[in-house]
Amino acid sequence: MRAGLASELLAQVKAASPKFFEHLVLELLLKMGYGNFREDAGHVTGKSGDEGIDGVINQDPLGLDVLYLQAKKWDGTVGRPELQKFVGALHGKLAKKGVFITTGSFSDDAIAYVKHMDPRVVVIDRKRLAELMIDRDVGVTTEGTYHVKRVDSEYFDEGTI
Image 1 (cartoon, rainbow, N blue to C red):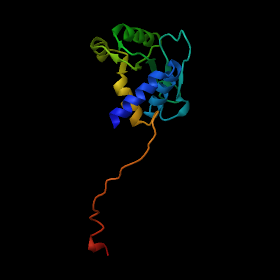
Image 2 (cartoon, rainbow, N blue to C red):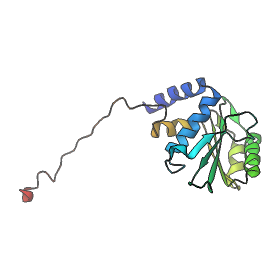
Image 3 (spheres, one colour):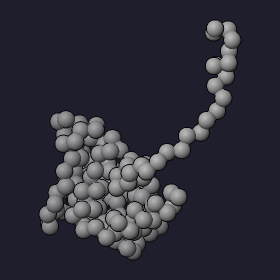
Image 4 (cartoon, one colour):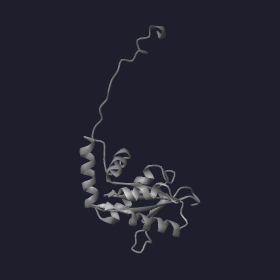
């Protein structure tokens, strides 16, 4: 069921506009606890010429610790050159960390590139994106629950009567 939900969810994400995707990525990271659960902790840059940064999340109230976002709605594979552009944008902001999320996948070369670098960059592909959205209730709703019952041995403890 989860795999089917993930597939349906990704189809919806891919059908949405790039602007919607940027907002979705921001909402997801805020729900994951970045920005200390403050609704106003982040914003989407929302413009062309954004210098390779699609969103910003202030990790603390003063904005001393900042997380930069890149959201790419792609069907194909994101290669190392795209990640190099993002890392260049992070350097331009004197950033220490960033998250690059795509509806596509990442090449092995791109993944290897970001593993041991400063600034720290985390990459999230379509599969991980769907998992995170399901786990954080972004774009999904609970239709029903299944309760598993077991015998409550404490109930049958006659010493409590």
